[in-house]
Length: 304
Image (cartoon, rainbow, N blue to C red):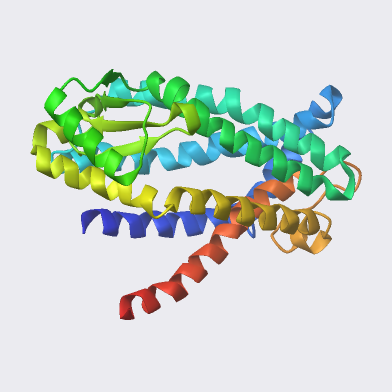
């Protein structure tokens, strides 16, 4: 109940922030400031990348109070938070660096495609984005996740035998069973599958193994295996491919419509590129349609 009430406050703030960025002129003011800063002298991509980076930094700073309160007040109040402020800050810095190293090149490539690949740029951008997502699925378990947590092979032979037998019954083949030091951040217990192809692995939180009996661990793992058995992961990937294709096609059309910019409080450049503006406006507006779609579906699910 506490998290739900806090979530409602976050939603209200997010709504006000959305209005501030769009209809009240926040994004337009930021864009005009960067256009007049002289960054165009370093190439057409420079002011656009600067706009995306500045938007990300400002949005992140505005979200920080909510993140801090959620972690160090709500989670702390109910005995779940185990994270120190130093660890939280370290995680934040690591996340920002990883985001910059991975995110800026892919965004720069998409912006370049928007300006150089003709009317079907959105198709090339979609293929690039999908390739990037598949690459992250491969790199996350072995490269990214170990930057934040330690992963040790599961040493409990009895539990390993139970887990292996359960996976064999479902036809699931993992490349390893690992225990993650989740207790240094939270008392929450969990287990998950991660990876793709040769990097596929099963990860248990150390809190899970401490709190639950072997039979209960089987039950948690069985839930995750249910996703595999019902092909939820494959279906989600296919759904992501399809929805992102529609999204990029829609963006390809909207980015050439002047009313798309002016209707959301932004003045498009008549001489320069507006690709970064189009990306940001699209990312800001699309979640609204997802919200109303879910709002219509939820009553149906409740009746069912």
